Length: 422
Image: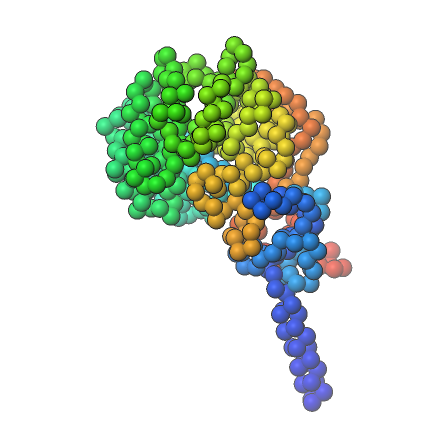
């Protein structure tokens, strides 16, 4: 009996020592880490403890972690941040993107492409935001932030979005302050007219609440001059989305005659205007993006403008958009930065978008497929590309929330079976 007791004590000590040695809950081993904020671009290990990044370094011992992800040959990045999405999903008819069928419940369309944070771009206004929070934000594993529409009713479509009487700067700012944990900006969208009222009221709200404004410039005939928008109405840090759109009702940033980026556009970017992709259904054209990138004009941030129409057309998802820019000549670290750290900076949430020690453990792991891939825009123009990004694994707040090929599932030795250790 005494021998058995001593044996049990020894086993208990060994077990306790092993547990003590396992200082990390998850270790991502051997991946090529790209973390633009911290200037990391090389093979490293990423250690996570609970919901926090614990360490990024070379050759962290596997025995220090309870769960290992082997990421050799893959890319490891901060979780992607999509700053232009539409997620006020609901069942109301005739509401376009506000509490409607055309918006998307987040979790089914984020983790599978490495996105851990989204910013709903104006689906809700100050009148409807509490419903959006209750229906979407409070029920999502994805971190859901929001740009508050300057229109109180949000994106109900039609006459609702043309009603300048419902564009209340003070109420918008008040609700933004009340929900400052979630509201990161103000949105202007879909206004048809030659007045600057929507933009100016949104900027007024932004000033009061100390948050940026995102402008979807709507339409007018003739188009309102974007030079005036950039230089007289917007502030440094405000966001011009759909920057590569080519529509008759909007002035493009690339001159259609010379095929060159207009001089004042360069000046606007130097001033601090943020140029966001906001791909959408018809708001991205290779006729604008290819000459812009060839001249060295890159978007500050990459985003999707995802909704039921855009995701089933040429846009598809965040990784498809990122892959397009990679194949147009933007290098991978720049693509990652425009989808992580630069996006976090744009919405003034600099605690996100990086893998610093102590940061929330939002991580994406990608493989880079090589082959002959086709990428087209809404006009039908197609480019062929050699590279296509594919999400292997997504970690949200330290938990594996998506695993394409079971790289976080460890097989039991000799059993022929596997067990998940999520």
